[in-house]
Length: 189
Ligand code: SF4
Image 1: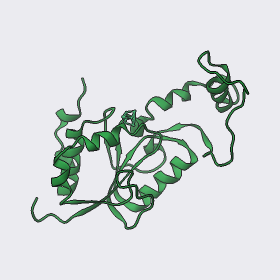
Image 2: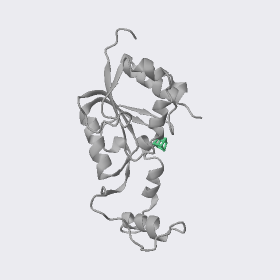
Image 3: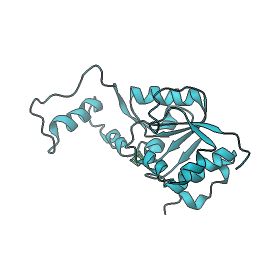
Image 4: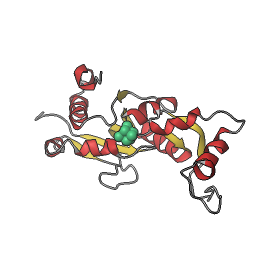
């Protein structure tokens, strides 16, 4: 990859567990080679919280549970040429999407919060209060996968995708040939 132009890359975690970012670190010593071709912009990996430049590649972990997730995802779409949904949470909501199954009442969000903070047999909540501080991001009516909010260019399945998969994906994107990613890498059956 000696004459490849260096790409600028951003990553973020929406409603995710950071496991997909841990997989990025699982690229291990190959990260050092990659850094010849990739410069990180906004990312939890360097603690940069705002875009400093437009990016070639954006990796998004997690789906959208609240309005802050939506805002961040739209910012990534606006600032990244190629946007990649990394992992099951980004692709279809992952574990948080289980709350979408709570649709028994006219107000499923209220029902979900009451189940989480008051009614669940595993909850100890002496005040019976539900967090409602205005600084908390507003919860959405349900959990949305990234593609339901913005256009996504590629989806990398797995929970999390392995470091090998992310390495090969990044290499393919750097080379401008993401369609060359071997299918067997992302098969789980
Ligand atoms: Fe975590 Fe798995 Fe979701 Fe990645 S896909 S953020 S590892 S739960």
